[in-house]
Image (cartoon, rainbow, N blue to C red; front, side, top):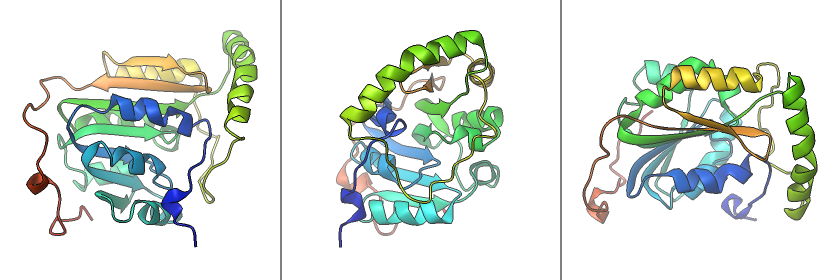
Length: 230
């Protein structure tokens, strides 16, 4: 039987993983992936962070993430993100890095971005990749220019694929202008830009100085005595 963690694949969301992992701060202590899906990004983040929390509201996706990250310093939490923040399941100011890929449109985006920001310690980093819809003439012109390149990239990676059971909803996807407006209102000073894979990327750094010090020692890493969030 093939180990699920060995099953790598590529799609236009996975295309952003390397950029997101590179955005993680040096000596990242704690990282959170909101809407983790099958845990592929959390698996990659575990190589850079002392401890990773992977959250998803879908029971099927959470179970896939548990299988993929078994044996790694990753805790999978099955919960609604905004409820988890409200109820204190995810402690505020406790994460060095927070990310979310193609999940923001499943939530109320403004409050969700503000909630993600509230979880960051001083100097912590946020990187969010999301979906937007073309609804203006300029949007369609940009899309028309990007589509041939997107298809070329997709074919170079063997086509688009992804985990079975991934929730899909296009009803609440905002326009490009709406997504930018929401991001800049929720996160003053954030950087928002389109990517080649018909996604946008939001990057933001929490005010304050990131905790300085030595790389976490093995004794500082979570052990089997670590208290799970849920």
